[in-house]
Length: 187
Ligand SMILES: Cc1cc2nc3c(=O)[nH]c(=O)nc-3n(C[C@H](O)[C@H](O)[C@H](O)COP(=O)(O)O)c2cc1C
View 1 (cartoon, rainbow, N blue to C red):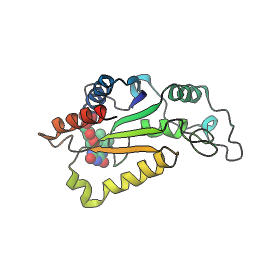
View 2: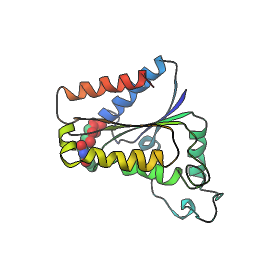
View 3: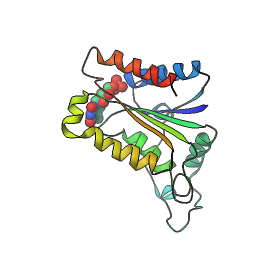
View 4: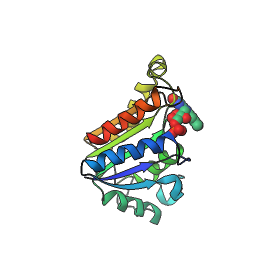
């Protein structure tokens, strides 16, 4: 499968980028092809301005050139995997803005559904599973991201994988990378 691997992190040496690389290497060794979309390195502008605002009375609205280019990049692939750090119990604004602008009315929802049958989110979480469970952050993220975005856009094979404990020290980072490798192998 051709996978668009979308990352949103400011530091190339981050655990998030290491997760993306390990996932990509494992998926490639299973015969998948990876196209990298490093939104930070590319300088993607996440702010939704008027040209990309949905027109609820016109599902054929022509969006900005930048958005049409992103749509074409998605369309030449067959699956999407987004790898990002959890920031404020959600995704970085950079990735949120990519979705705001590109996963637009009449293309990802409305008259159409997102072009891919499979889309996964791998979220590198700073704290432990217990910290998430204590306040229900994991459930809230599943509702907002998996149900609210992936399901909403008609994607059949969705997955939100929370990779816990990134800043908790050993053994978490190694476990996170092992999980990313496993996910790449089973994609
Ligand atoms: C702005 C900001 C907000 C964050 N919010 C959360 C959060 O809500 N929950 C959490 O578990 N970790 C949070 N963290 C910690 C990150 O998830 C953590 O730094 C990251 O997963 C570590 O991996 P990295 O090396 O790829 O950055 C936050 C970090 C930043 C910079």
